[in-house]
Amino acid sequence: MTHVIIKEPETKPIAKMVIPGRRALGEQWQEVTVGVKDDVIQVTENVPTEAPPNGTPIFTFGMNTLSTEAHNFLLEGARQVQEYAKRKPRRRPVTDAEIEKMVNKIWQDWCELKAKTLAGKTHSGPGLFNQREAAGIKNWSGVK
Image (cartoon, rainbow, N blue to C red):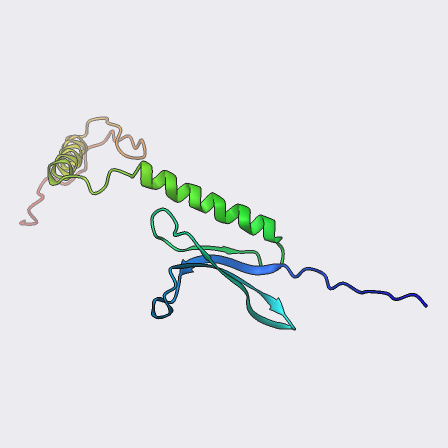
């Protein structure tokens, strides 16, 4: 008599995440895998792991379409992105002097375009709009 051993197929994870652990239990960071086990969605694996480089939790969702290797690849890629962002942060916030300079330039450009529009001069503004006619309003104060 031949015995047939039926091996259950490996369940694919629905989601994988690197999240802070439960501090009350002394956990630091956990790599949690959520999957379907016994026809119920539940945590299938909970393993301690190192914290992401900038301390932001990482989530990957595959909804049973990605393999465990694909989830691990995405998690590693997210860790590398965070590491790069930590090494080369964006230059924010800008200084108040830089903000003031940008606002003044925008205001001066707008005033220049408005003056050209009212004078009926040809100009190119935002959106490359060309104005060749006078606005036709002689009294801007509203008083007749």
